[in-house]
Structure formats: C-alpha cells, structure tokens
Image 1 (spheres, one colour):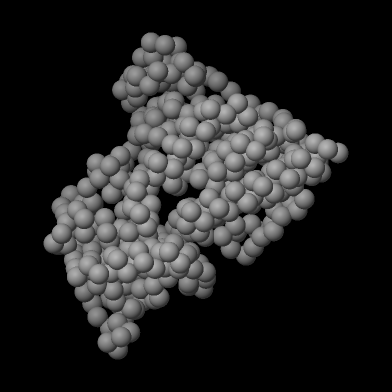
Image 2: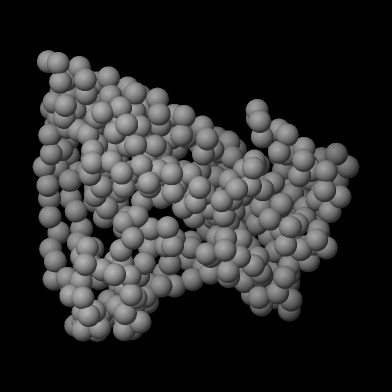
Length: 413
C-alpha cells in the first residue's frame, strides 16, 4: 500500500497520522515548523475539564515513537501533487534544521548564540536565541537554528557544540514520494488584532489577545504561569474580555469562530483561580457554548466575581498615566452605554484558516476554509471549519478513514 500524505502536524494531523498507521497504512507526516503539536501545544488547559494538553499530545507522540509506519518531516512543505486517486506523486521541500540527530539538548548552542528572534510559539510575548528549542514538548526533541535571524558570518554555535551536531551550511532539499491520498490538516491562526484599530491592540500594552493570555497562564510560558499586566508586571485587579473581536463582523470575519466564548470563560477561570479578589467582566453578543460546554459555562458563571454584560464593545482607550483601559460598550439589558475602567483587556479574536499551498483538488470558500474534496484529497479540523479540540479529533479520524479507503482501493487496482 502506498503511503497517505498528511499535511500539518497539529492535533488534527497527528490524529489522522496515528489512526492511519494503526489501521495498517504507511504515513508521511509533513509539518512546516520545527516541531509537531500545532496550536494545542501552546495551550495551558483544555476545556471543559481544564486539564493540560500534554496528556493528549504525549499519547500521540508515544504512538508516533512506537510506529514504524510514520515518516515525520518537519520544516517541510508539500509543493506539488500530481496523479490520480490511489496513485499520486508529491514533491516535498524540506528546509535545513541546521542541527542534526546528534543533538543532546545540552543547550550550548543557545548559550553561545548572540542573535535573537521573536518567539512565535509564545505569540511574541518573549524572544529566543536564533539557536532555540521549539518548546518543552517539541517533537522531534531537537534544537533548531533560524539562519534568517543569525548575525552575518557568525558561527559561535558551531564552535560551542561539543558533539558536532551543528550543520550551518546544510542546503534545502526536495524529495519526491509516491502516495495514495492526502489529508490536509493545515490548521488555523488567530485573526490579526492590529486590524481592530478601535480596540487598542498594538497601541495599549495592557490589551492582549486570547491566545496571548493562554501563553501567559501556561507554566512553560514567558511568565512562568503568572498572568500579569505587560506594562508593569502587576497582578490585574479588574479584567475585561471583549467577545467577537473581529468575528461576526462584515468588515472582518463574518462568521462565528465557535470556540471563543468557551475559551474566554476558561480564561476567566484561570484568572479567578490565581487572583480570588480580581473582578472579571465579559462583554458578549451571544454566549455560544453548545452541547457539553453549556454545563461548563453554567459552572463558571456561578462565580460571583464574574459579570457578563450583553453588549458590543465600541472602543478601548488608554489612560496614559496608569496604562489602565477605558472600555466603552453598550449594555443591552440596561438599555444604555457605559464606559468602565479595567487594568487588563483580553480580545477574543477568531479562528482564521492557515493560508498556503493545498492540492488543486481542495478548493477554498470565501473565508479561506477548505470547501470540498476531489478524489483522494480530504480535509480535517480547522482547515475545514472552526471547531474545538475534541471535535477536531473526531473530524480527523473521519478524514483518516476516507484516506485509508482510497489507499486500499489503490492497492487493489
């Protein structure tokens, strides 16, 4: 049987890969970054149980390590697929990691490195060296070197490595594989909050996004798990969440991103657990917590220090003397508009599908989500629509079954 190509190493791609392998299909798993794990690896906790993502990821990683059927290619992108269902050929471009499998994780390369880069894993809340470990749950667990961030002519990391694991001159390569089918699990990214000019992101240091707060709360995040005001490092005593920041808005994202209400309720629980005296206010249009998440909403909403105000936020402004935020919003139930002061504001930005190359048989709708398939091409997870982790896992399992059926038909042909 020819392999199935899985594009994307987040929770959807990982699920599809291990399910395919367990069913007897060989798999080529392609991830464009230096590590698997995707957005889930950046989470502090899942809802509704508020357990860490390490559990689910580690189970997938163990299955990867134990499987001989899965070829993992990081820093890699599929660039062309040609052929017919069951009998495709794919070209995969692989960027050099500049660190070989001889890496022992000693960290000497990072200690010697003088250049810095924005820490994309932490959504720009911190920096790393150009020689860096992607994160604490990286797979593969190897350092990488961002040559674009390196100082011209510098080879300090190479000199510092006692194990000869640095390959600064390694070139990119392109490999060609025969495959039977493709599962596109290319994932999502947060909506660009700088486009929401009236909400202060990028101008007011104490306006952050929901994904940034997730990293602020994470024990492996830049603050060691403490949620603090970026402007002065203080514990916030009042926090506002702005729902539908750009979502359900024809000027930005006309659709609902499905998970933002539950995510903000979870983030409110983070804050209330750390700071019992801190007051949290959530400004919302509608609270959408379908199915099993409704009980989660009801449980958190019983907190007397959590207030929900139905009304759209019109403006967020900063008091330059204190860096506190003035939030102007309607209160639909009271029939008036208020301006309230907060020490931290969190924007619930929506889910946007990752752009980039997809096989020609997978079209995109007007929002960029995959809209249909053709022959041996299947999509899974947030590449298809916004959804939470458990729904993504189910969706990826379904895509894996479809791809498996295609591969088996091709093997019989």
